[in-house]
Image (tube, rainbow, N blue to C red; front, side, top):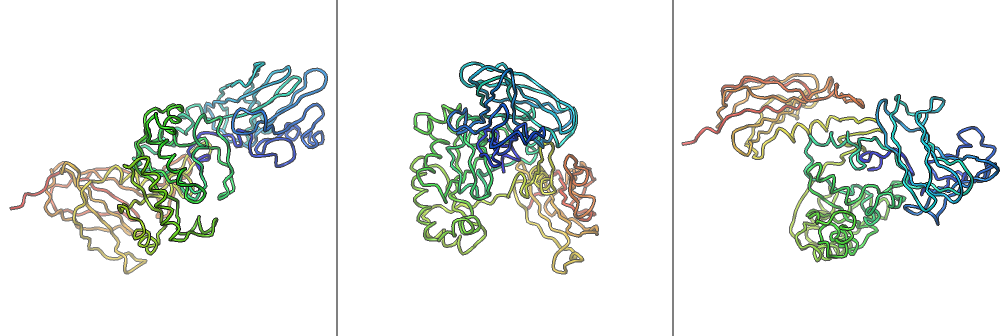
Length: 521
C-alpha cells in the first residue's frame, strides 16, 4: 500500500478515524496513558479517575472524527494518548505536527520516548482559545529503535481535542520519502499506473483531493485495511514532475460510474473554467495535467472482480466500457483508453471485438514498491531488489533500435532445451553505439563465446561493460545494503568486429561498443 511504502508518514490512524476497537474511548492505533503506565484498572469504558476519552464525530479538523479528552478534578491533572512501537533511525531528524483545540484551561504537549528507556523529546504547546491550531516540533532520534512511542496530551481542566497528527523524517519531499524518490530516479520510470491493484476498483478519487489533513480515512473492503487518502491525484502528478513519468490512471469499474470517471478526466485535464478543473485550481494546480493514458477497471476478467464481486461477464464489461469511454472522451477526446485484462487471450480477443476503438496495448511491471516490488521499504530503510537492478541496467544501457541477433550456445545443465545465453543487440539513436545485452542463465558455469558484430566497425576505444551479478545465483540484498547484488562496471578492449567474451554465471551483462555501421555496396 502507498501508506506503508511511498509516503513518509510514520503514524497510523493519524486522523483518529479508525474506531474505538478496545472500548477505551481511544481511536484504534492509539492507547490511553492509563494502559501504558500500568494503571489500566483506573480506566472503565474510556473513563478514568480524572479523565474521559472518546471519539468525537461532531468536532473535528479533518476527515470525520477527532480524539476527545476531558480532564476534571481539582488542580491541574493530565491525560494523553500514545502510539507505540514506532521505528526510528539514529541521528535522523523528524518533523511532527498536530492540530489541537480546547474548551477550558490548560496546555498541550508532545513527547517521544522509548519503552523502558529515556525521554527523547518533550515540547509544550500554548493552545489558542478559539478553534483549531496547528502545532509543530522537530527532534533528532538519539538511537536506532523499534520501540519508540509518541505521546500527545494535555495538562489542565476542560475538554480537549486532537486531530490530524503527523510524524515524518524531516527530509521528506512533500510527504513522500526522499530515499524512495532517490532510489526511483536511476530506473527512469516511464509510465506509472495509479491506483494499482484491486484497490483501483474500490477507490473514490474525490476522497484523495484537497488539503491532506482534511481528507477522510477509508476502509478497504478488498484488503481489509485503512487508507489515509494522503496520496491522491495531485500528489501523483507532482511525483510525475519529479520523476518524469507519464500518468496512467485506472478508473473505478466495480463500484464507480461512468460519470465518476468523466469527472476525474475533467479534474486532471480540464481547464480551470470547468467544474472539476476549477477544483484542481483551488487545490493549487491551475494548469491541466494532460494525462493521456486511462484504463477502465483492474483485472476485470477475474481475480479481484471474481473474488470480491462474483466475476465480470464479458458482455457486461464491453457494454460498460463503451459507456465509460463515451463519457470520458466527451470531456477530453484526445485521451487513450485501455480495456482491462489479466493474461486471458480469449477474453482479450472478445473484448477487442466488442469495443469499437483503436487497439492499443500496454504492459507494466507489478509492482513498484513492496508487494513483490522493485523497491521494498520499512520505516527506516529501503531494500533494492535484483529486479530493481535489472531495470536500472536496461533503463540506462539500451538502444532505441533493435538489431537482428542470433545466438548459438550449448544448453544449461538443468534444462537441455534452454540455451545458456540469451542476447539482444540495440543501437543508439545517433547510430554510433551498439549495446549487446546478454543473460547467462547458467547457475554455476561461465560461458565463453565468440561475438561477431556483422556490419559494425568498433571505434577502437575501450568498450564499457555493465554487469549485474550477485554473490550467489539466488542472492538478494538486505535492508540498507547493496553488497550482495549490484551492477559493476569495467572496460574491455574491442578493436575488431569479432571478439571473444566470457560471461560469468548468473549474470545480466551489457557491453557498449562505440563505432559505426560498415557501409554496404
